[in-house]
Image (cartoon, rainbow, N blue to C red; front, side, top):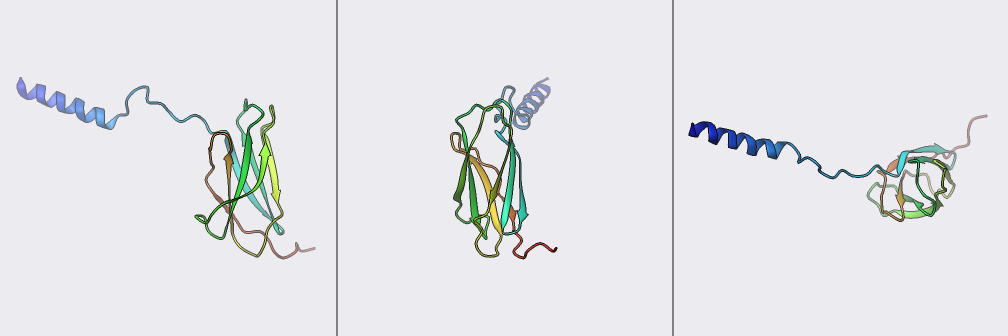
Length: 128
């Protein structure tokens, strides 16, 4: 009888370590969704969506790093979010030399940041 009690207590302890506690708070849905970067001729087109119900007054910073993902990011632009609008786009025409760039978006008010996305713009004119 004692062995069964020790085994069941051990099993309960192990189960409590493996399974997360009920009611564990989960991270709220991200405001920014479906973030994409498309290379253009000497530019990059950024598109993203925001979840429905985002109130006006919030703004999204467009951040860019040159050449390396872990390089310092600088603000390229800030876009104000509008009530009822869920799709946004921005074209960055401030490209310098032929290089790889990394973009991420950050909600100013909450600090929420997307994962960086790389792009390398086209530096020769499109074929005609």
